Image (cartoon, rainbow, N blue to C red; front, top):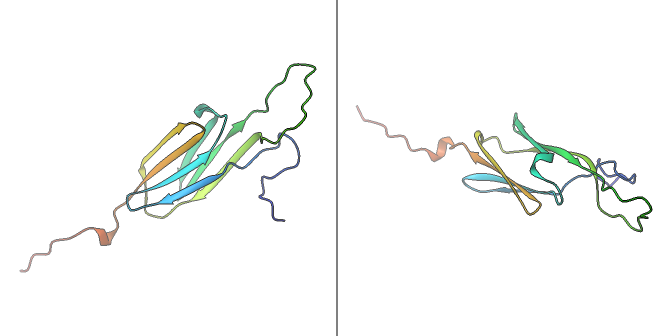
Length: 122
């Protein structure tokens, strides 16, 4: 019962990439570990406060006659849905992938308390 939903003892049945979410004053950053994947193997979407990261990591093909002595890496389909703060600005989302790390940056909407409103005295 302690294993994540996507955990499987069956080879090639999927995996769950590790994710870090950082919240600072100007943006929310999501960093996803995707070693061995190219950016075209990953899909991103954002709707109703949920960032969805999905894709597929193919099982490596070995020449005939090669026996796998040990296999600890994970392969298969993956999908992560991450709930984000309500003040994320959907118009300012960017993503970059480098060295097996996907970094998604989401801007923040200015909060009502952050804006100063001048009030004229009549």
